[in-house]
Length: 252
Ligand code: UTP
Image (cartoon, rainbow, N blue to C red; front, top):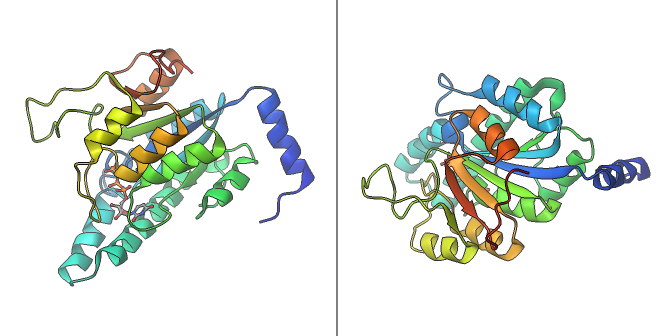
């Protein structure tokens, strides 16, 4: 897709007027645990509110439907990379559903590359995308996108309220980090194994990119999207801040 001079002009205007950019990694487990149990309408409303004040990019995960497809194919003996490709297709379908829920507030297509997402962002609407390449999760896509667009904040909305010393769903003694540095996050997730449909809170690629980009990240439980809006606008939330400095990136 070619970028013309008026596109570049509108990007420059957005920068001049100080519009801040948010990238939201929206776990499929919170947006679409299954097609029957989804938070699409509530998210469309919340994202519409954020889009009034910020340039918003959303990267949508695969959720329960991706796990069902991956599980079915794994039973057929399919290799992990092909399972990832299936997962990516489902993330893009989920992205399409969120675009439908957002209506005119959204850019109407699902970008399949980072450059495509940047170009879509020039239209000033909410840009929604899914996975990009095997061997990672949508957290990594969101981290790279945040780096490419120079985001002011990366928000990771997932099924647990932050980053813990262990998986809080399995270990009742797990303790939540209030804040941590990107290097500490990297050390924590380096122990995890990545397989298609894996459940780790942040994947290793995402942690590495957050570490190198320095983009501040907030990890919180995402089932109630109103809480995400509150976190961004007021700075009051339960979760984990991953940042270099002592200063909180919130409120934005
Ligand atoms: P995610 O793991 O990102 O979605 O993608 P999720 O499970 O819904 O996210 P959470 O747990 O709620 O936060 C689903 C699967 O799609 C493949 C992987 O197999 C991943 O587990 N995928 C996704 C890729 O291979 N590459 C991508 O860039 C994105």
